[in-house]
Amino acid sequence: MGNLEGKVAIVTGAGRGIGQQIAKKLAEQGAKVAVVDLKAEWCEETVGLVKAAGSEAIGLGCNVAESADVDATVKAVIAQFGTVDIMVNNAGITKDGLLMRMSDEDWDAVLNVNLKGTFLFTRAVSRPMMKNKAADGTSAGGSIINIASVVGIMGNAGQANYTASKGGVIALTKTTAKELGSRNVRCNAVAPGFIQSKMTDVLPEDVKKAYMDTIPLKRFGTAEDIAKCVAFLAGPDASYITGQIISVNGGMIG
Ligand code: NAI
Image 1: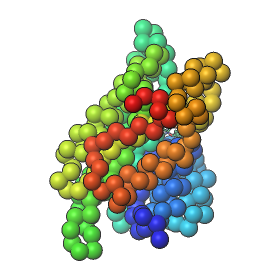
Image 2: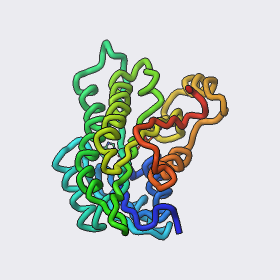
Image 3: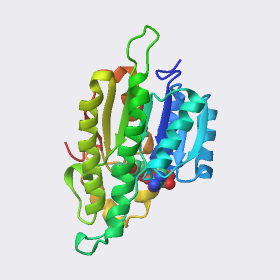
């Protein structure tokens, strides 16, 4: 039996990349997973992986930046699985450019998905999580895990919108932990370093080499490296951890 047996998880941006690996890892540990991505059909591959891991899944199309969409998604998950125990706010986008030339549209788009989307799902799951009860009647609460970024801690030229959104996610994580802690709802963030993915595959070779020079472990991270940390934070082994930002970056920054 896995650590997360019987738990219900929502993972946003789970159609591919890091979110897909998170959904798979949570399923391997026994969680039922609601796979959320912009379009329902983008969720199908991940739903298949969750089922192949022996767990239950539903795929739901949802724009995390739209309040009504988010509320309807959480409602659908509760209708299907009864509650929500684990929330992983992973959906994220980049629209890079120097801040002098950054358009209002590119600023708003990134803040709306990365930061507002995280807020909307956190708000929507907080009440059902606070009501969760363990078999002995004590509060079972829940675990919210936000995917931030190393650049939300250190800044990065050309990413004013993205770094601000991830810095905001870090602050939101700490506030959520303070507001919901008394009801046993924990909230932590994982700050990945350079992770091999479709988002980073498109970077020029010289940029990739410059990053590699800053990584003591001398390899880029994998989506599974992030998924393992998320699964730990989701489960009972992390029951006294909240309000923390866990860097998973090969030692890139302390
Ligand atoms: P990805 O681009 O491969 O996957 C992101 C997923 O989010 C996609 O399936 C996409 O359709 C979905 N998505 C985008 N906008 C959405 C919206 N409005 N509503 C619902 N779903 C939406 O990206 P990757 O690399 O897997 O990144 C996942 C998370 O990890 C993001 O939050 C990203 O900022 C973060 N991250 C990634 C790093 C990397 O090196 N790849 C490093 C640090 C953080």
